[in-house]
Length: 258
Image (spheres, one colour):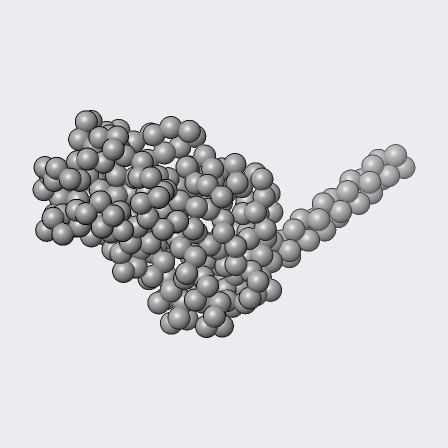
């Protein structure tokens, strides 16, 4: 009988310790609302659960274009962290006091691709743009999406912008530009490499041209802690995680550079 009571007491102590640890985890785990560049949708879908499992924090993700995020943040949108598709938007938010200084860093450098779902439609040199033998070319809105601005810069460098202007259809973000091509509403379009590339190879059917990085300004993508995220453990942990080797391996798997 004494041994039974001792065993019961032992298990009660262990249970109390486990409950205490569980409570500590709940107290220290937090939540961060993250504005994520549309081109970074696939990598973030892979990164988020790994981060959440490792830290206990929870992420609430919203995807979109940098320009739209800027306007939303200016108007009080409840974001803690911005993972932008450019470096200017985070710097601008920092200058305007909407992001604390010295939290901004480059988490990825993107690449632009001219893509079609049709095999043989896009050649390896992008000469299809000079031929112009297509009805619609999809790009992201260059006013709010850096990948769209890069697409316009490429066409200007190649001397085809004026000729192709009547054929251009604009998406609100690089995701919508990709959708125009994927659904056949445009025969080809400028999309992010991360949308058609994974683990060292093209995974989207069709044909593509990896645009030389020399034809446009670098697609430097910066992350920044926003004013609302100051003191948020989950937000600060996410920014630290994005700098880790584990995160960078995943990011690199989608064609990004550093």
